[in-house]
Image (cartoon, rainbow, N blue to C red; front, top):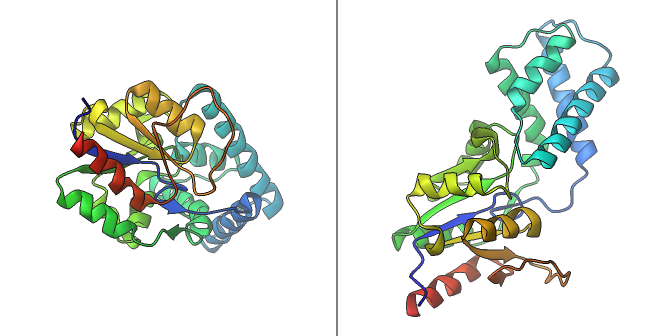
Length: 247
């Protein structure tokens, strides 16, 4: 017999926050320009913008490829400090964090929160469920927390586990285990909701959570692993929670 749901963990990008189709190179260049202009105003000696931008772009691409291959996240603040040191610019941790925020700013402006999300999360919290996010991200936690605060969601998602903090990336089971431990949750009584078959569904299944695929378009592609449930909107999670309460 299934046990009642005690917790709901959600992916962040394209699950809690929707960005849609974005021009990643253009957004990254916009963030690079913001950082370049910021350093210029500080009187820093800089190479031409194109050299500066491509140095950052190549560094981030290589770090991202390596993190995908190893399931280990990289530290964006450390990467920025090392990169700028090679360019003859000494950044403090606080200065590198500020530049990381400029990386994220163009993308954050595109974020949309699905209508009714805050009400759904508040309802789960009122029922006594533990709610949180588990996200693969090299963007520092403080920057993502600030974004959730602007969207009015920070208090509704008290458990927040970011790969940049715990080192491990989904689908590695350790990031899921970190979230379960932080929320004092049992995997068998916890839903995990995400949009990625590889990172979210495969990872949640491996860790023993009840996997839920958020799939607004009803994708039909076959995978060797399957979600336990499918939804198109976040408010459909309520139905799944009620199913387990009545079993």
